[in-house]
Length: 92
Image: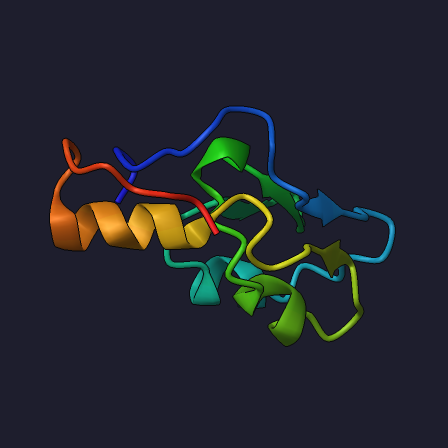
């Protein structure tokens, strides 16, 4: 899934490292490998891979992660899977 991108530097994803306890839930639930847990806290490894599904924020026990689902246009990415990269797709 690493090859799917919409626009660079538009995601609303934020990580408050001070609140992070290093549980790894974000790394487990993220479908695009956006997070890595190291030393012993999470870090954002690939911000532009974020499709803003909200799974990380919903599963973070300390509310260290915030994201506004859909702002980066996850529907665009899903539609390219269905219709192909050359299709004319509108972002909702």
